[in-house]
Amino acid sequence: MPFFSVIVPTFNRAELLKTTVRSILAQHYGDFELVVIDDGSQDDSLEYLGTLGAKAKILRQSNRGPGSARNCGAEIATGEYLAFLDSDDVWFPWTLDVYREAIDRSGRPAFLAGKPHVFSDETALGLVKPESPTTEKFQDYLASGDEWRWWGVSSFVIRKDAFIGAGGFMEDRVNGEDADLALRLGVAPGFVQITAPATFAYREHAENVKNDLGRTLAGIQYTLRSEKCDRYPGGEARARERREILTRHVRPVALEFLRRGHQREAWDFYYSTFAWNLSLGRLRYLFGFPFVALVEFGRHKLLRR
Image 1 (tube, rainbow, N blue to C red):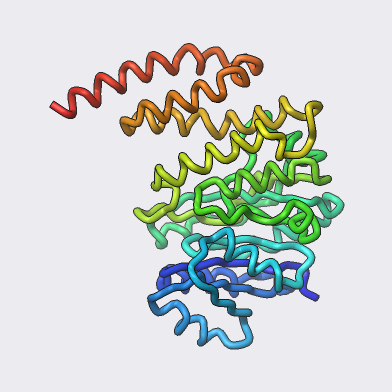
Image 2 (cartoon, helix red, strand yellow):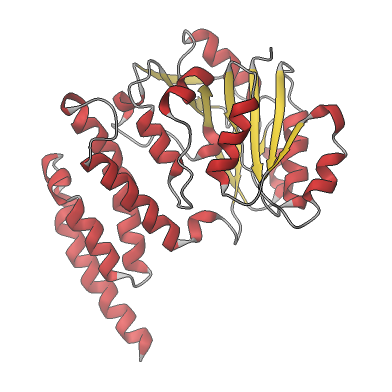
């Protein structure tokens, strides 16, 4: 049984997928299996995956979205830990070494989050160098909410039994399935943030799902409903910690909606989280948001003339 199962969902990204897979197969640490789930691609992805032979387990499903694809991969994964990587992102040769060391030093935590390096030009990745690993350790994910502690699915390494216990990824076609899963893992014992070195490279490009405002809106609304309906663990005793994390997600999204001229949606976020932000003492945001909204409303009105 391998220690890691590396799970990569993909959809119509044949060329980017090749770079992703190469970065996985170039790991210094070798005790892993690679599971790639093709989510109904119509390009050359399957043809390329067929060339990998025994280097990877290949699954294919009709197009049901990345959450479903990751869950499908997790079902056949045999590793103790599931390491997720999207098919437009890449690892560094030392990535699994760093994760394994952090796991061993932290007593097999349920959940780890790696450190990102943002890039748009692949040639610059060679400038990223290994460093001595450093981490921050917490009793669980909810205890880490004093600041932003993770950065997307490609940062996630989750012990398989904890992943199953949390129910896996939601399969709705929304953005934020990573935030939802992190919150459902909230009280699973042991959360570790890798603070050095960078463990994955996040590719910025026009097709990033974060650019789809409709899916972002739906994802935020889902997590807010989930909190208000007590779907996340920890009960009332951990409510403040959950809301600390949730409001850190919502505030920048609300401001981004203002900048893009979506006033109604931005104000909905503001009102939905007003009481939480007030209880957390986020007065700068509460008083500043109406001013920013007024400025952005005026700016967009001028642009429409």
